Amino acid sequence: MPCSRIAWSMLFGLVSACGGDAATDGLPASAAVDGTFARIQRDILDRSCVSCHRTGDANARQSQLVLTSDSAYLQLVGVGAVQQIARADGVTRVKPFRADSSLLYHKLSWVPGHHSRDYGQLMPMGTTKGVTAGQLEYVRRWIEAGAPRSGHVVDTAVLADVRLQSASFTPLGAPTTAGLQLKVDSFAVSPGSERELFVYRRVGNANDLYVTRIQSRMRPGSHHLLLYTFDESRTSFPCNLRPSADAVRDIRNADGTMNIVNMLPMACHVYFAGAMTQDFDYRFPPGVALRLPANASLDFNVHYVNRAPIDLPGEAFANLYTADRAQVQTVARTLNLANTSFSLPAKQRTTIRTVFPMSVRTTVLGLTSHMHSMGERYEIRLRRADGTETSVYVNTDWEHPGFTNFDTPIVLQPGDALVSVVTFNNVTDRSIGFGLLSTDEMNIIFGYAY
Image 1 (tube, rainbow, N blue to C red):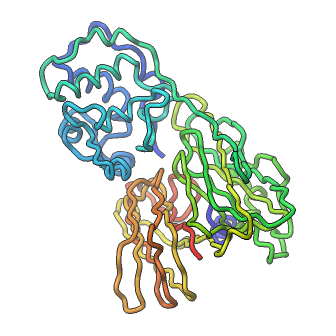
Image 2: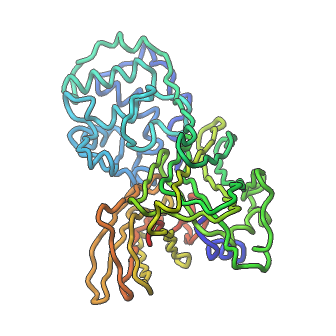
Image 3: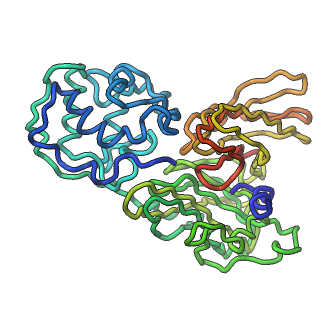
């Protein structure tokens, strides 16, 4: 929920299940299989993955991966990863003889401490348990044996280990140096539903704070974590009011309708910080900081999507590390550039181009994007006053877009612009516009600048 324009347009105007807990049961003892990969296909991919990774599904489009039996092997073995961090690391979906360099193995492994890099959501989605320990080892040994398409290369005795993996979550520790922690306490997301909520937190700072580092962590299943301040220059309704402190405010009622009262504060929001990945850690360059005014309050916003048949736990933490004013030479500001007026025709791929011109010299430190499940590609371009354009950011993961930090900041002069070029694929039978559900769409650039 990016800005007041968005709030007013809403006030006045993820995915399908991928398995569920039943998919992690032990393997049938009497099933007839033909080779190691055939067993992986039938007992893991078919049961736990193809409900999302099938032709026409939004998840298959986003990941560019179809795991039905007619496609899975050719789309897995020897094929480079699409997920941005994995691709940058040179990871392959399945790299023969190298399970440690195979994204499939990383995605299926829920072992605590296994993941040193964020390669996106663990699989299968829509469950609190992964494949069994035996199934994971079966996949690992198949890869280490060269990942052949046919033949028996792994002893099926390993499948006797039917212990279920469980996803672990370690809460984010509070800053050990100057700073503060905000959190949204644990809550439940009902089966087959979305839950988006706010919690208004008073910071309690007598003087201005200067934030030099922003760190956050969310339980799996969240689409975003956002922190907002309020526009103090606006004194008319509803901006002359503030929410009750520490109370959970859902934007939807129990029947799924919008809770207008809880949404009213959105009209007064000013974006301060946010993340769309489970773990996020951003440090401003030396001497640069965001200012948090004295007696500040922050509206903490999270959005969870649960397609599992059981409750999904939600929880989120944000750390704001601070520095003395004497250490700050430049006060940064946030970028929140949104197009809220667009329409995506049914059964059609559409590319939306939006130009955001700069009226003053702007030094961009980092950028990220925000779209929903119909979004296939989000590109940000730098357009100079003479019309030349350079691509500076590309994202293809709507759920967890990466944040691009520019080691050499981008300097825009008056007349230059940032341009969003977003490709959506509306596979539904209805026209889709801007909205808050994952089945609606968004088109937003977030970032930091000065």
